[in-house]
Image (cartoon, rainbow, N blue to C red; front, side, top):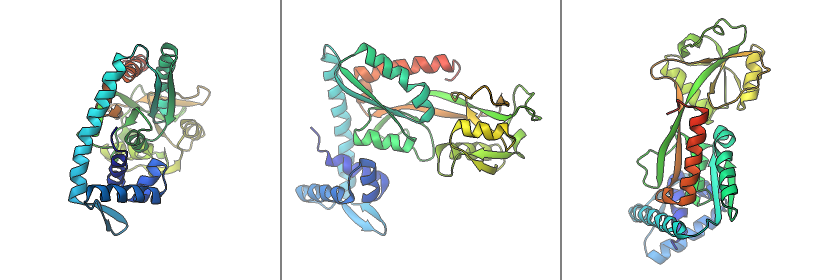
Length: 305
């Protein structure tokens, strides 16, 4: 087994403070500090140096993390190989993902694994992308579906195996009687002067819409905040503004709104990745889950790739 304190050090490196790492691990800050002091003493090197409100990693800590990445990846491959030798998958598998994926993509995969492998316990966690990466690092999740944002790790991050799953196009939603409602397609620039309904600041959805609008040449006039598609659609239906909704999201048909595909170069879309810890993708149950998720995505969005 690999020393679990290496995971703790990885999360301190990711978040920059002991307190934030403790929150990601569901530990107390004192527990994180104690584990790292123990590890430092056993190795005979200093690992952390206080730097204002944050913590700076020493050269020894950075060297240790490089080795930890290789160790963890090889351990995942070893577990995957052993799992492939078993007659029947057993144990537990945890899938996590942002809200739309947790609604439309992960449940079919979980149900398929549950029905095919009765000795396997499958869990689902709904979480924002940055939280998904924390869950993977902490060993609390095995497969994550995430949206690429400015806060997600780069594809070159050796701790994770990040593979494109699909591109989820964005649609503009307007009141049914709006001047744009009769069009078959629109550009974001066509709605530049509209009041906008966005997610709360700091949310993935808020960042996605603001980034898309700025790429189209304008900053959105944010009139209201709504994190749920139903809430946003209700506001649109009552004439409070317009929203962008990903194609995967399902809207209630009783709202008097128009949903119009967006065009443009590049066409606004959110890129969805399937992420595991490096080396874990070779696990038979993870491979099976990915096959089901990919098939479900292709059925919902046949042109999503």
